[in-house]
Image 1: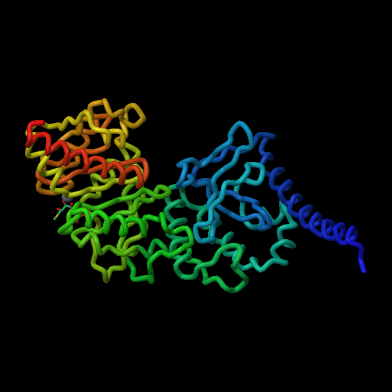
Image 2 (image 1 turned 90 degrees about the vertical axis):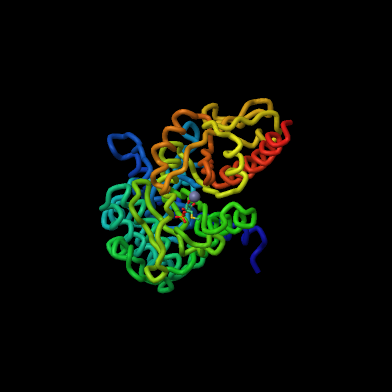
Length: 411
Ligand SMILES: CSC[C@@H](O)[C@@H](O)C(=O)COP(=O)(O)O
Ligand SMILES: [Zn+2]
C-alpha cells in the first residue's frame, strides 16, 4: 500500500503536469499577443479574439461590453482584463486576463502557432463544439463590427434555443449544427423555429424582463388598453415590445430586436403578425441622445391629470423625499430632497413618430431630466439600465400623485 505522503505526491504530480500543459498554452498565447513589434495589441468592442480560460481549449470569442458594468475592459493599471463572449457557447461570457487573449487569426493559423491545441482538443469531448465555434468565428471575422455583433447575438440566440448546453456539460455530437450568419440574414422574416429564450442567466434578459415588467405596469394601470411599452438595450441590441397588443400578455418571442442603427436583427415569427412599437423612434432617441439602457412609456392617468393642471410646458416639484429617487442627468447624481425637480411637457401629436422633434428639443432644453411628459397622453422615462428606469418611473408616479393633491387642495 502506498504511504499517504506518496499518494499526495503522485496526486500533485498528476495535477501539476496538467497545469503545466495549460500554462504552456497560456504562455504561447501571451507570446502571440505581444508579437506585433513587441507591443501589446490594443483591443476594442467587436474585435475577434482567441481566449484561454481554465481547463478549456483556446476558444474564439468577441470583445463585447459586460451588461452589468457597461465596460469591456477593466484593471488597466493592474492586471488588465477584457470582457469576452465565446462563440458557439450560448451567451457564455467572462472577464479574461489580457495575457490570455490574442487577436483572432484563423483555425490553421492558431493550430500552427500553438500545435498543442490539436492534442488538447483531440483528447477532449469538446472537439465538435470547438470546431463549430471556430467556424462561426471565421464567418464573423469576415464581417464589419456592427454586423458581427448583431450576427453573433442572433446566432447564439438561435443556437441556445435549439439546444441548451454549456461548456461544462457539452459533449461531442450533442450540439445541433449552428446557424451560420448567412443563414441568419435569411431568417429575418422567415418562419424559423424561435421558441422563448430560456437559458441559465435569463432572468434579467430583456426577452423575459419586458413581458414581466409589462405585467407589473399593467397591474398599476400604466400600460392598459394596449397603450405604453418598453424597450431595453442589451449588448448594443435594442429589444422592443410589439405594437397594438395587450401589453400584459406579451411573450418572450413577441419582441423585436434591432441594432443601434435601427436595422432588424431578430423579428417575431411572421404568423404572429406583429409590428414593432410605434414608440420606437422615441425609444431610439433616448438611447442615442441620452445613452439610456432602458426606456419605458406609460399611459398613466396621473400624468394626464398633472398636465391638465399645468398648462405651462413644464412641471415643478419640490419638498418631497421621493425626489431623491430621481437621477439628475446633468449633474450625474440623484437629486437631494430639497432640490427642485423640473419635468418638461410636450404637446401630443397624431402619431408617436411625430413627437420626435419636440422630444429632442425638450432633451436639449432640460439636460437634467430623465422623463418627458406628453400632454393628454403619457410619459417617457428612461435610465441607464432597466432597474433605474423602473424605480424612477415609480418615483415619478408617486410624486405626480402628491403634486396633483397639492394643486387641487392648494397646499
Ligand atoms: C391606445 S393606443 C396607444 C398608441 O397610440 C401609443 O401611444 C402607445 O403608447 C403604444 O403604441 P404601440 O405601437 O402599441 O407600442
Ligand atoms: Zn403612447
